[in-house]
Length: 163
Image 1: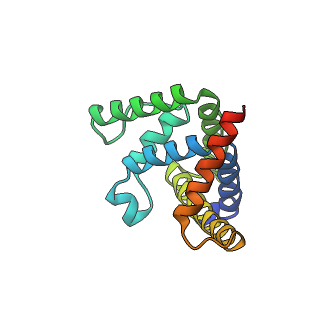
Image 2: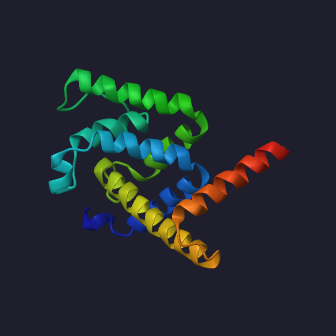
Image 3: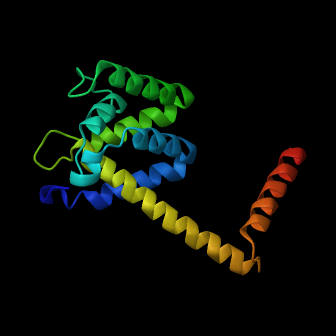
């Protein structure tokens, strides 16, 4: 991540976290599609042409594919199309979120920076989830997470039956 963007990263991560709060399932789907196109270059340098192509499609700023095969680009387009169809409202909001921060100005992020923020937000979400789960297990005096999972499933089933 560039030093010129260091002040934006926390805001981006917080906004991605807020997006997760509103659309948790869609967030997981975006994360899965993003990880599908992760490459070694991103792992080594933090920059990826795959992500550049994918996030141009996600942000509705499509151009000709850069440095990837047409087949790979078409797979990306199909994955993005499936996201759009699954939840159009969440897709539009996520697309706007990308466009808000990935701008071609001095203080804008690039697509790989945005993906880094997405991964950092996911780490934060995972940490918070583990902490909440641990506190819940302690408060309920449950030693086995499977018992908690079964209690939640039973609660949801009972709630649906009452509706």
